[in-house]
Amino acid sequence: MFEVARYESERKLVLGATIAIAASFYGAMFVALSPAYSNFDIEAIFSDFPQQFTEGFGLAAFNTLPGLLAVELYQFGWILVLGLYLAYTAAGLVAGDIETGRMDTLLPAPISRMRLVGEEFLSMLVPILAVNAITPIVLYVGSVLIDEPLDVTNLVALHALAVPYLLCCAAVGFALSVFLANESLAQNASVGVLVVAFLVETVFIGTDLEFLGVLTPMNYFDPTEILVNANYDLAGAGILLAAAVVLVLAGQWRFGRMDIQ
Image 1 (cartoon, rainbow, N blue to C red):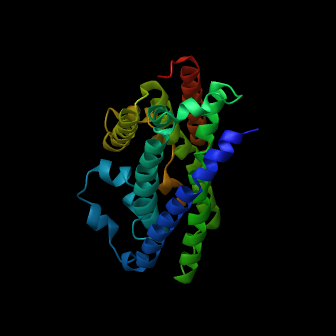
Image 2: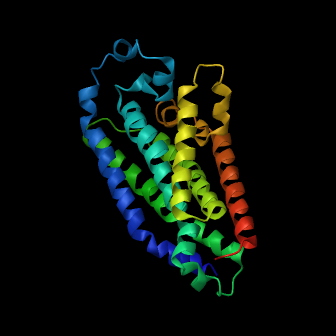
């Protein structure tokens, strides 16, 4: 059982370790720099900035370690950069295998098409779980070393709730990988979809079009609310998981009925 998932997961171990190390180093850098931000007068600095900017990027607590990490590491690193990267990677799962001819060697295996691509998507859990397991440990140790320990519950909750968000981003790429069946096009489309979603969620805050944010994954994962205010959106995590399941099922359904050329 799950032979394809195990094989694909093993291939992504180096990728998972690399992402986790890079994210940990990036986060540790801001932990080390955080004492320099403690004297910032946030209200004075950002008083003239538009509401979309201050609320969209969670700048209210920028002069605290949780607030700094929420903005610099999670708002950009997790929500944007990591989400885009995972979507881009997942967009090559099926389309890339078709273009290289590798899919022709996998299809004769004694498993259904739907299960084949479903297990390929499951391998995306390796980098997602790796980065969300290793990074919080590094951040907490670093925060203790500078005598400003992070709240363990909030930190664990943030990384647990990040998993559904990142799965949803990867599922966007996976679905496009099947429906577009061209690796480059699928990858570019996945990045474009998430960038537009990020802009919609950020730019329309406080406007009459703010309601459009409910269509974006970013609307259901707010690092500042979790790390600074200890507000956990469990319903939002459920919505993200449901969206990921729907996208994966749609991709499986499409792949089970398409011609491989």
